[in-house]
Length: 378
Figure (cartoon, rainbow, N blue to C red):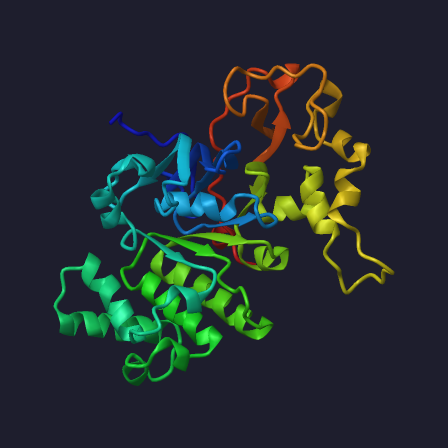
């Protein structure tokens, strides 16, 4: 296996020293078998980077490839029918070794999965086994990855339940999933994910089906645990309100590609891709009274929206699968050769057509170590 390298590093405002990305996704493409028809391209050239202690929010509508990207990081995409067509997912292990997660064997992956990288799935009731106590399920994750006896594993499990705010953890560790509310089941899933002190947490819509109050509690819990444990979080969601409150970096996806990548302040203040503007415009606000909400279609169907990108006068055009390709398209003879994720402003990337103006642009992952927690406190 060729030696993997993680690209360009940046300086941390807090530490004042160069630091390395924790994980980089490079040109990832994943497809699924469609019977007698052509394969379905769920992910097509995704590029993103996440740093330690950073929350990267991956947003977009259902079917855009968010969950497939995160599940690929854990090698949880069923193969077949799934297939890794190309790309790399480079992960920096605790010993500072960089590995391509897509090339690891199942035994090698088991040492990372649940130990260094953990995942919270969308619906806790379908993720927890109804015939085992929650304690048994948390302890199983601990004993798989830590060299501890049963008594020590029980203590770690109780401490994990206590850390996520489950009352009376010593008593409730013997309870079954159906004896917990939806919010408490989600806390159990978080306790299970965090019991082995992972360095990266993949949270796939962790507040789905929870009421607003419980959502806020779960998200605040994740934020607190991230800071206490110096953990990175990839937060997968379609809720831009959740993103605004919890993310450092935002990665907007559509049709299996990244259309915009920026820090949370820049993205909300100056969205550059029409799809991102459409997402933000469709959110109702308390400051304006409207007879009807703006739809995403109304924004992306407006040709003028595609002329607002910096460099538009030089032929740089936002990529959009439903628009005709520009006349000066310089597509490379390779998959996704008509698209490039381009840096269009300081710390701001947009997916654009590979026109004459950008035909030789690099296709390396966006690299942004920004964290809100690093900013000076007022």
